[in-house]
Amino acid sequence: MNHYETVFILNPVLSDVQVKETVKKFEDYLVSKGAEMTHKEDWGLKKLAYPIQKKKTGFYHLFEYRVTGDVIAPFELEFRRDDSVMRYLTVKLDKHAKAWAEVRKSRVKSAAKN
Image (cartoon, rainbow, N blue to C red):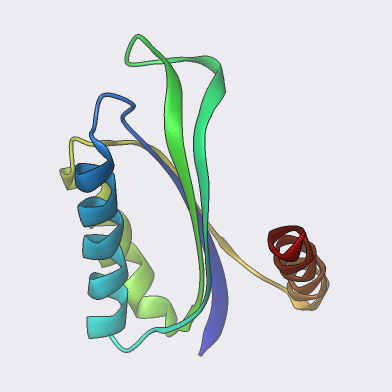
C-alpha cells in the first residue's frame, strides 16, 4: 500500500451541510475501496490565487491515506464527475513528504490545543 495525499477545492456556493456531505462521500468512497485514512484537515474557505469557474474563493480539504495504487484513477474520476469539486490534486508521498506531513500534523494538533 502506498501513502497518498489529496487536496481538493469545493465550490464556495455550497452550504456547510453540502460541504460536509461531499467530503463524507469522498471519504466513504476511499474507505470502501480499502483505504486507511491517516489524517484529514478542513482548511476552510480560502481565497484562490486565480479565479476558477468565475469564483474567487473555495472550501479546501486535505485527505492523507494509505491505499493501493489502482484505486487512485477511479477516485479521481469521482472528483471529475462531481460538479461541486473545482480542483483536486493527488500526490504519492515519499519518505521525505511523509516526514513533512508528520510535522504538519503535529503543528495542527498543537494549534488546536491553544
